Length: 310
Image (tube, rainbow, N blue to C red; front, side, top):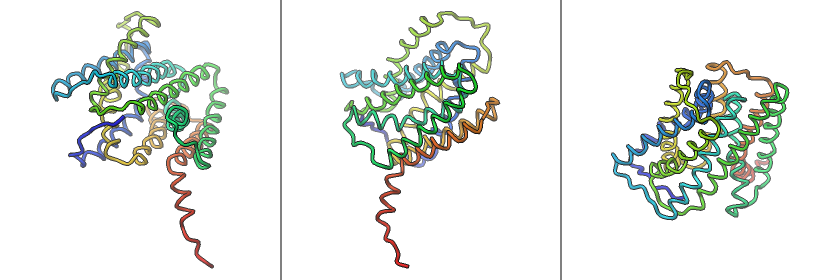
C-alpha cells in the first residue's frame, strides 16, 4: 500500500518516532489496566468508539477525503483483521499475562510477517542470518513459555491468545501490502476503524452484553481514554508518518525498544514479576529481532571489509 504523507515538517520526525516508542511501550499496560474492572470486549469497544469519533472529527475539520473504491474497501477490510483479531485477543490475554510479556511476544511480528510474506507475496526465502534470527527468537519464546508453564496453567491460555493475536496482526500487515492505493494515513485509519468497530460491538454482545457501570474503576476508564486517543489514533498516525520519512531499518528499531520499555513499566507501575527465565528469553528474542533487521547488512559489511595482512 502506498501512503502519501506530507514531509514538509521534517523537524517533527524525531518527535513522532519518540511518540510511537512511548505509545507502543505503554499500550500493553494500558490494556491490562483498562480491563481490570471493565469487561475486555467493552474496554476495547469504548477505545474504538473514542478513536473513531476523533478520527471522523479530524477528517471533517481537515477536509480529508475518505475513499470508497473497491481497493479502499479491501484495504479497510484487511486492516480490520489485525485490529479486531489482534486487539480483541490481546485484551483477553491481558487477564492471564503481564504487560511486559505481551509486548515481548508482539515483538515477534516482523519475523512472522516475513514468513507470511514468502507465502503470500512471493518474497525471497530467509537467508542464513534471518534463519539464525528466527531460531534465536523462537528459542527465546520457548524459554518465556516454559517459565509461564511453571507459574500456572492459566498462563498458557494467555500465551495462545497473544500468539494468535500476533499472527492475525502480522497477516493483516502482509495483506495490506497487496492493496495498491494512494490514501492519506488518517483516512486509512478511520476507514479501518469504521469496519472494525461493529465487529467489536458484536463481540461485546456475544461475550458480555452487560453494562455494570457502577463497578467500573477510575484507572480502567482513564486507561480506555488514553488508549482511544493515543493508542488507536495518534499512535497510528505517528507510525505512518515516520514510515514515510525514515528508513525502514530505522523504523524497525521500534520493535526492539518497546519490549524493554514495556517490561520496565510493568515492573515499576504494576508490580509485575520479572523472572530470570523471562530476562533470558527476552534477550534471545531481542537478539533475534536485531539480527533479523540488521544481520544481512552486518554480514555483507564483514565480507566486503578487506583483511589487513599481519
